Length: 167
Image (tube, rainbow, N blue to C red):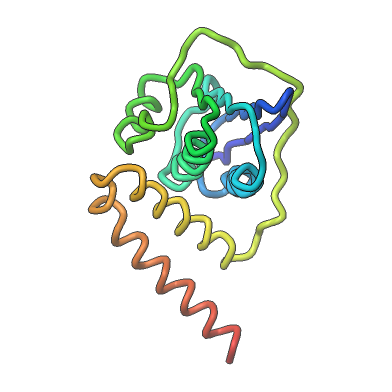
């Protein structure tokens, strides 16, 4: 499966995200970095274009959830544009309609650039997976039973990596 691409831009405090291809944990780190940044500063909104997104895994959707929660906490609008029926169903099934408004037929094209990430260690990838799934469990109680085993497994994996570093 080919790795997707994330493109980012910002204009007037509104952050634009465009996703192309198969969106997975591999291309999710820039979203986590943006979520951390937006948690610490004011912003005017989020616009996420999924028109070219062919598929998403739960880690990627968890990163979107982090962004949506940040917007909700700050009273900023969070919108997802042009999600395919399949992607909208996936996102709705994980409770993301609680933090995003879904729209279609509107282009949000901007001067976006491919997102780059500094995170490439196995531990940072594991922490991304953990944070994403914990966020999904926070957004919707129904996600707890879906992801509690994933969270448990990843926590053990992180503990093992930390022990390996100490020895």
